[in-house]
Amino acid sequence: MRLLATTALAALIALPAIAQDWKTDYRIVRFGVLSGENESDRISRYTPFQEYLEKALGVDVEIFTAGNYDGVIQALAADQIEFSFLGSSAYAAAYTETEGGVIPLLTSLQNDGSTGYYSVIVVRCDSGLTSVDDLKGKTLAFADPDSTSGYNVPYYNLVQEGYQPEEFFAAIPFSGSHEAGVVGVVNGQFDAAATYINNEQNGIPQRMETKGMIKEGEACIIWTSPEITSGPFTARANLPQGLLDDMKAALLAAPTAAPEAFKEMTGGDDSTQQGYAEVNHDRYQWIIDMRDWFKANRQG
Image (cartoon, rainbow, N blue to C red):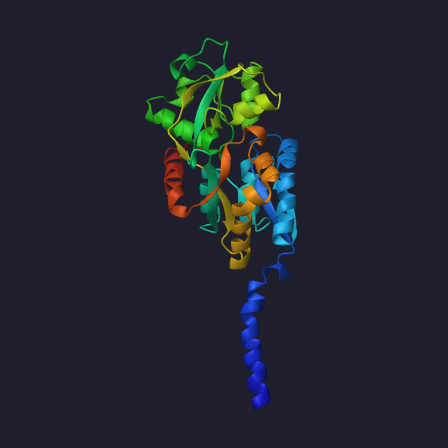
């Protein structure tokens, strides 16, 4: 009896340790990246960070990309990836798609202490277009239907400002990505495109200038949205707490533990991000409410 009792007690003591050893069940951890830029650039920017995570977590780490935002959202919903960097609207879409099956962990913290960014509309600087009113009868390209800054926020705010996009613009196509929209403007395919900036020094147009995709002074901003809460680094809610804690700790430590990888991932030499700040779901509820408005009004 003593032997049985001792054996049972040992088994009970061992259970928490086994439950906390998430590496037994997760030999590979995968994180998704949205299609804000072309795939080769996405992989290139995130590879050093991937290698850092492998060392920090002690398991293999894989980057997951898709041709559009929904591909990453569906991968989360199907338990094909564990984590993803999401925009606010993509997080709201994932939260709705999974019926609350995802949780926000961290969001970007900028050098100025802000945790937000802005949707903007850009035109060719030499186009003579200086305001939204000048775009009447023109083509405005949105990025992706699940993009916060590339579709939901600009569309929603334009309506609040009295514009009916389907009636006011000649066409409102989706370009497929932020970079594709800006390139389309520069090349004359679109009159204007929606994208985002973090501040005057950092954002999609500035990053494209740094990469040589467009020339300085080719794309100019004519409209800026109210501040948007930065999108969260998101996890599936059904992951072990140990994995969630270890991943969060790795991201929080990245700016000092892997400064070069962190800088490359967040914008290279033009990066204005200093680290991460913790967030919870309440911070993104307004985005879900905005998406509900879209559904009620049959937009998006």
